[in-house]
Image (cartoon, rainbow, N blue to C red; front, side, top):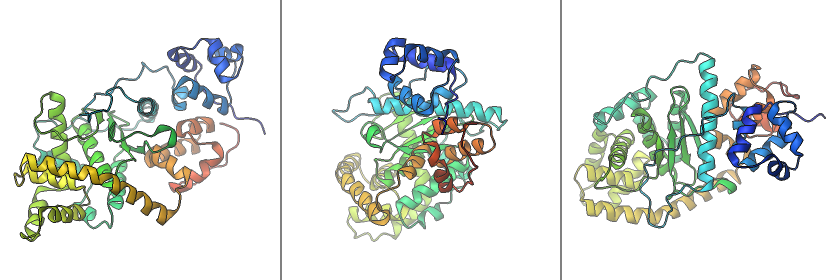
Length: 405
């Protein structure tokens, strides 16, 4: 069978090599081809096979999807850093986090240009909120736009079910959600980043660290949505901030308050708090509310602090206890998933990493003949022979394929 050629953009291939600091000879040696062949890829005289393009992406430390961009990117912007790092965590991004950010930025650039070319309407909610909104006002605005009903979230059996319900509503509104950082070669510790958001008028992307507990992932999703509404994209890790000393910290506190209100509306929280027996210990009440609203105990504690039911010192004391117990919770969730499902299908993991909405658009574009098989494979980072299986996961019929279109 003839090997499928990758329809890369020659000048982008040259850009990636030069940005990586490799000469033609260095690149040829690492990729295992001749310098003349590498140069032919960059001039358009030859096309690499998909396997060769995959190897080049690893050598150049760039996502495979970059090669399919129509133009070399004006290198990717550095995300604004909203993190408050725990002691011992370096400020510099790890190679895994840097690579992930570049990969999603390249996908976003490709997708944004594609959607604009296809005459999609720009999203009207990016930047529609501001720091002058009250947390209650902005939270209600976001919930209304997404079509989120708190009663349906409360009725979910588990936090994982609540998270998936939220993600479904978010992606229905053309916000692309990727859950990642859990593959062996790209593990991203939650201390470094719990999530980030890339704003765009056509293709905003939210990343959620799948290493985190489900309740924490849900808060991260809500938090990054607020960043989109106020058009302040960046990287978050959600360390507790009590006294802000910079504009960045003030923005984070605002986003945290709006996020908590989105997940636990104040009026419902007040009613539920009254339902709890007064003689119950504080931790029991927090546990009960956490289960009821499908959020972490830390979110409940923050609501209690904001309503001056507990002091700052008590809040920080509780956060310390909850963080210590978080690792146990994540381990329990992992065992429950394995017991329920066995070891996860690697292609389901890839689907989670890519996001359902992004996967659907790419597969639909392939089905309609707008992009080639090799471009589809490159954007989703999935081998062609596995694309039908992934299509079934997202409920799409898959066309016959063989040669790249």
